[in-house]
Image (cartoon, rainbow over all chains, first blue to last red; front, side):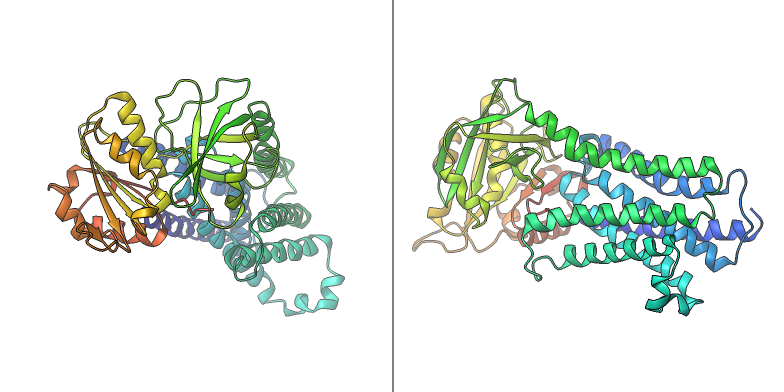
Length: 32
Length: 440
């Protein structure tokens, strides 16, 4: 169960990093 | 996870994300080069974050007590393994997107003539793929643990160093000296983590050796090493914690082995014991260890330790997984702590029950109930048989089940089954603790 928590944390980290990378790209294309 | 640990855990997760994402968004500060298309910028962001994640992998296995405490070392290693797949996935996706529109870059002849930064990228990705393949299929590829461990460290260093060289060589965002300094500083931090683990910590351990003062044979091909600090006071541990043992070599040896302390934590002379079953690998030599042998111990580690004194403690041990339970039981006996304790102890048969006689004797000093569960019981056995199940909890524990604290240690398959059974009994996550001794 604790490993399930770790798995969810891994998934959440992956999603956050991809979303932040999209944000980075959008900001750059928008002129930042 | 206990309440106090929840806050610590949240802070470490926030710091982890900060160390991955802050260096990326720092690239947006100050002067920046003209923007390219969305996909190129997205791929670049994936590359930077993937590299930052890879660098932090060193920190995850650096055995920092404050980092591992909220979860336990086994969960941190599990996270290390899983998150590495995400990091490698990000880096490979970065390369795929950037080369998708330029297939000519994948022609081997062009690769040889490519700029150095591109060659470093190829080296980095090659090392990462080798790293993942060896880690996932080590047993199938018949790679010995120690050889794999050494190659794991070498490949990780090559992948990260080549990744940084590629990043600096590409130079697009790092033309600004401040941004270059930030990323080089981050790389120095990662190297510092590695130096801490492989040089500083072993140097510290070298000054704090232990001597084997007794090797005691136990039931079921198990030997207990009794170790005395040599020229220093040793360390105090909590019952249920573990240490990394290095035998037959110096603390600079790449591979240490984690074992639970099986002795009482109430001793004040620094004496520690580890009970080690012969599993056919280096553990087959433990019983031959001469008295006086110098060994090195790195510890204590782990969040698997006795809880609220008001709660009934349910200890569930499978085979040699009983060692942290023994430490808990011996400690409670030494402290005169008579909180109710039930030990559900699974073994192959009656003769293979390690510590059987001592546990029976300890019942006189404690409020301790022992439930033996045997896979192959002798004729006429009226006790529990087979494997530990939720039905056994119902037979031996007083409801409500969510009021007790559960401690589980044993083979993975047993732990998976028991964690599932506790879930079915509506025992919250905060009330049970588990330690997987197969985590490395």
